[in-house]
Length: 276
Image 1 (cartoon, rainbow, N blue to C red):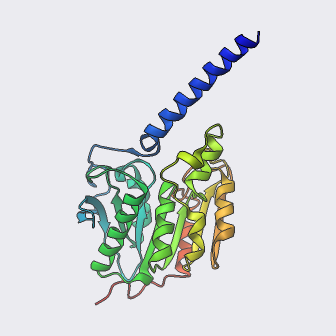
Image 2: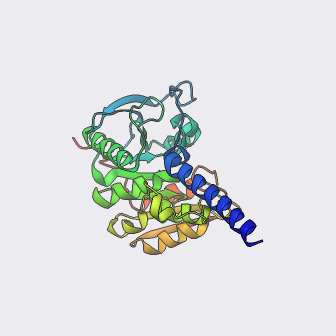
Image 3: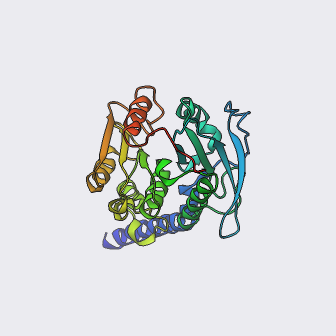
């Protein structure tokens, strides 16, 4: 009997190690789901966006969608989540810019139209590149609003921790992707093997711009308690919009976006958005 138990434990142990090895080797393909087919703004139903091509400091080429701000409105520097591409956010972008606000949304490296391979370090370089482009276009830091959704909230927080921005809006954020992975894949030592950990919890206290967090009550991908923990770490002024029965990524909802825009108006006046 003991021999049989030993064999069973050995088999289970072997299967566990195989599963762990597979996760270690495939973790970035499990984390990033880039849309490969390039879709133009016109094809996506967002014709007012221009397509810009940016060059990163490490030699990659990034596609961005740009809508100039009107009448001194702010520019949304937008960092999307880990799945799909810019075209999936066309309706959200259209609603965000309907009142004259500007938009500069980057397609991360390896996502449609952009070169390279997605990594945490790489996405931070992409964010720096987009910020530099916003300055080059003539926008002042006090009219640049960093907006992140899901995975992109970690990119937005890291940028705002090192660059001056007018405000930060986070849709479905987390303390770190390590925390989310550790809760989801509790049976594996995520802390030991995870490469891209996006520690917003270690950076949010360096953000001194106003912070707005929006999160769905029933988010099954990044549970609400992660957003509440990050909110507790953030500096004032800050605000939290909890969406009852809301799922993952709720900023674009018709009952949420107007509230977010109203909050933003308190901190970003609509004049002198661009230098010159």
